[in-house]
Length: 446
Image: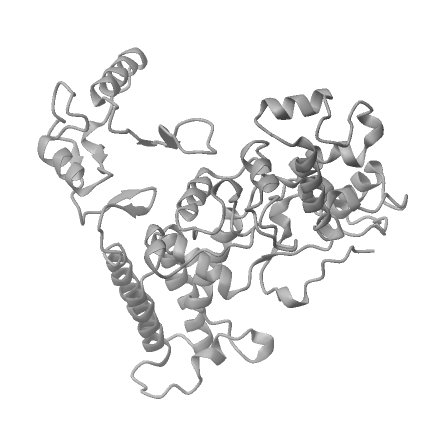
C-alpha cells in the first residue's frame, strides 16, 4: 500500500506485457494456481520462459530469493528453472526501459551507440551536403535516443559520445570546425540549421516529466504519488509533519545534498534540479476560488510565514486536522457568517452544536481555534484568498458563447471576444518555468 493511492499496486498491464508486484507476505504458489486456472478456462498458455523476477528490498533478502528461488519462504515449491531471477547488476527490460538493482546505466546505451555509428557510416557514403547531414543527425541520432532518454537518464558518457559522433559526421577529419556547433543549433531564421541539441532536448524531456509530476488533478499518475512520499522523506525537521505537503506548493525546500538527499534516486534528483534551473513556480494571473481553497493551509507560498508552535495552531493541525485553505474557511465560518450560526457565542463557554463537536475532538478552546483560523486566512494575499475574490462583473461569456467559440476555432469562424481575466481551472496550468519570484505580484488582477 502507498499512502494517497486508494488501492494497493498489485499489477500493471500494457498490451501483452504484465508486471506483477508481490510483497514479502505474498505467495507465488497462489499466483501460479490462479494463472493455471485462467489458462485452463481460456485455452491460453502462459509463457513461463519469458517470466523474469526482480527482487527488491534489502540486499540479504535479494540474495535469499536468488539462492532459495522462493519469493516467500512458505512457498511450497521453488521457482521453476525456466524463470529467470535478475541478480544485482543485471538489468531487465520492461516496456523499453531497463530496470534492476545496482545496474550500470551505460549498458543499455551501448547497442544504440553502435547502431548510430553504423547508420551514419552508411549515410557518409552518399556524401550528403551540410544541410543534409543536419537532417540525417536529427533523424538517426534523435530518433534512436529519444525514447530511452525519456524512459531513463542519458549518462554523461553517452552525451559526450554522441557529441563526438555527430561532430565527426558533420566535419569529418577536420580538427577545427568551420562553423561553431552552437551556431548550427540556432534556428534557421537566426542563421543556424536547427542542428540537434542533445543537451536542450534532454532538458526538455525532464521538463515534461516535471509537468506530469505537477499535475494534481484526479488523473494524477501513480508514480507521481509515490514520488511525493520519497520527497517527504527528505524534508528537514522544521516543517511540522502533519502540516507538510508538496514542496512546490509550500515554502520548504527539498535538499539535493547532504544525508537527507540520499533518499532521492537519480530520476527525482534530476527532475528537482531542472525545476530549480528553470525557476519553476506557482504563478497565475487569476486562480479559480475552488483551487485556491485546495492549496495548503500551512507554509503557504504567498502568506506571511508564522511559527506553528502555539497552542491554537497545534490544535488546528492535530485535533481539527486542518490541512487545506478550505479547512481554514470552514473553521472560521462561525466568525465570518454569524447569521448562519445564530446559536454560537463568541466566548470559551459556548455550547452550540459545532463547539461541542470540537470539544469531542479534544479541542479545549474552540473559540481560540476559530480566531486563529481566521487570522491565518487573513494573512493570505487577496489573490490567494478564496474569500476575497471579486464578484462577477457580468461581462464574462456565457457557457453557450464559450461553446460557440470552441466550434468557431475548429471551423475558422468568428470568435466572440471574452473580456474576463484569465482564470485557471486546473492547478497544473498554474505552474510556469522561467519565472522571477521577485517580480511576481500578489495583488488581485483587475
